[in-house]
Image 1: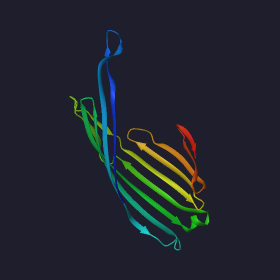
Image 2: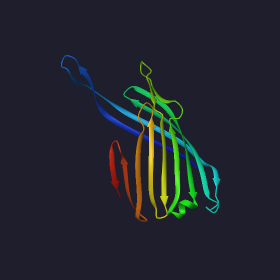
Image 3: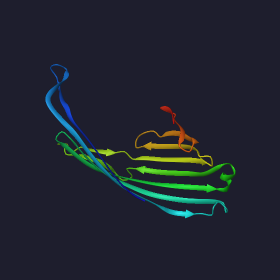
Image 4: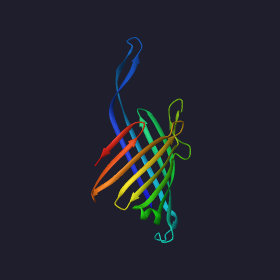
Length: 193
């Protein structure tokens, strides 16, 4: 599978302000500036291993690997920046006759590394400031049942941050209407149709 995508954003008419030390507040200069951003992605994924016995001999397994590259350019007032990122990932789809006997269709396990090579954005300011993009590692496990119920757990870890765990689920009350829930123990609980 090959994927190509682009995105663009533009905003004009932002009022420039500066901090006035005498008045101890920000004041408008009378100038306006804008922001433009553009990005593009190229993705590739393919099956790298497949064992299909139709669960007659135990385990059916398919492993899919992928890579995503992206390029970003931005302009803010007279400043410009550009940068890139590379992501990698793997997905394993596991079917086992022991799962089927218990009403489960398959187990999915995935892992991705966002910004797997050192990625960043370089600005054309006097300091030539570079903003590095953090490496983010995600892994997750999902159980899919014969009646289209899905249960999942996801762990993600950003460079220099604590790992976060999320739980989720989905049940189709009819072929077009899923009920979904998600729990992020540190932050939120969500529910939706």
